[in-house]
Length: 289
Image (cartoon, rainbow, N blue to C red):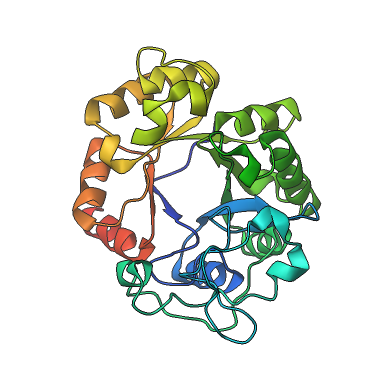
């Protein structure tokens, strides 16, 4: 199933991480109000089999506080070892002051009391708003003990998508291509996005379970000729983008936060970009339109 959009697609990375608390209902709601119509998020599976939105495989001390308001101590517990109810007691509404992460996203407006939401909660919000959701399956082939397996994660995510009536609004993405294959094995006719980075391209057998087929675009096209390729921005060349288009792939790089890079991708003919700062991306598009 090929997916094409009118115009240039702006994806809000983790909602809009540069502006609002990442992977939270508050952040997604604010991103939608800003005009974002494609929301990217990360998923993990809890000890009781619930798909939740969280980027890391363990609680991150730079964004997580306990119910008493105190920052948790490192290392954080693995998400797979906690229930959805236990996760719901943590506050993820602000970045830890003085942390590298906090400095990196100093424009983020805190929302104290924001919680780690379930995927179904997010999908109910986005379905009501008519927004699309790109759901990343976060599994680690080099450390399989830290997350659930790709097939189980795919099944849990698909159950949440189907339960929320979001099949027409969902896209599944992953660096670990086993999860994308699992989605297809489960019979879900959803758009798929094949994520790549310098690190995954350096070890394709680990991450993709296949050697490079001459080039990354050709390797993606061999997996799914009507997919989206989402390369790391620093790795993308104009030649690779043009090759991907010739193969029938969409190209939507991540994570693009500098207006100069946004303008360059528009000029190259990219299909969109994933960004922490959709407000800046909207400004760029208005300026070049």
